[in-house]
Image 1: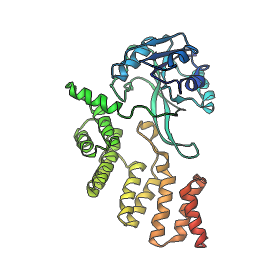
Image 2 (image 1 turned 30 degrees about the horizontal axis):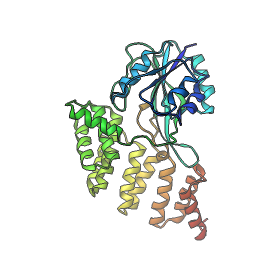
Image 3 (image 1 turned 135 degrees about the vertical axis):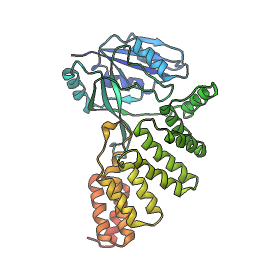
Length: 358
């Protein structure tokens, strides 16, 4: 059975750290905690779980710190988690089973990363990340921000999910500040970093600059397809916020030059036509979203609701506007079957009940 070193980098995580370590301590074979400058009880808490606690100066480079943590590992595989991550009880048996059954030629195990949740706690935003990485020198983190280990060798996809459960907000400007510093130092961002730089600009409502960066990224013949498709979605929202609706639609449609349409993009195109009162065309795109397969293993960001709940709810709106309230109610009922607690579904249900639509 393979052994696992849990490798963490932390700073001022006294609120989260014990919860994270409690969730995995009994499942891993070694715990390594690298502190990058805490001023709270983080080091004290980490020392209750492991003697392998190290201090390391923060250099505005996540890969540098993560690679240092990996350098201290002595087990077969390195596993990373952030302090505000947790392995839920429902995942622990699957975790142990994977340790017992993992093929020895596996280099990287990809696990789901659930980073947002709806009002019932169901994941509403997820994607696969490298989670167990063979402990050898060829696997190293790259990227000062939004760091990644290039996926080479034999990859295994697991349905085990790590949940990101932040209890307090961090420094919202940190990532953009690091990118600005790199550029001021004359550093060149690779294509992946260009994409994430564009996203950071978008998060900071710097829409014109975000569009410039993302459009330049989209012009490149290289780059990961999933990043290209997601860049189209982010770029479109920038255009919307700049009052350039036609440009938004164009870049959404452009996403299909990279691959077959994703449900997330179909919902965005449907939204465009719904807001422009072209209800039949909007319905077409929402229907298309319902029939698109999830491409979880492609590695891109996945919004599960875009494959069922959101298009069903929006089809209810479309057909109500068209005047076919019976069909509208059918779609709302289907949305309610997925999320009976949804405020939108319950509001619509009351609306149809008042109209005596059966």
